[in-house]
View 1: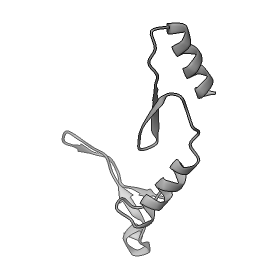
View 2: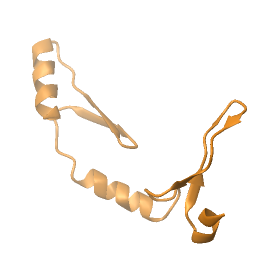
View 3: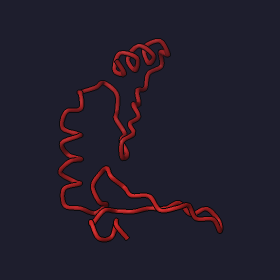
View 4: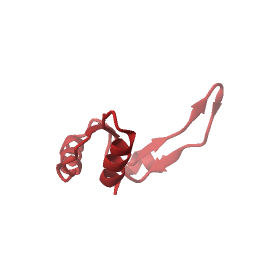
Length: 82
């Protein structure tokens, strides 16, 4: 009831027929909020330029680099991860 009165977001986990207790979510922005795309653009704006292709989803990233020389691939990706 407190969460509803203060405007806080709540969640619980459902697995099969079991449901956890309800927790108050204290971090982040609501899904679909107006500020979320702006914050995401700020997050992306300081990404480094890389030789590899970057694939991102949510807060996870993958680098892709192609070459016939495995040593070159290892060197490029290792350098870019640092």
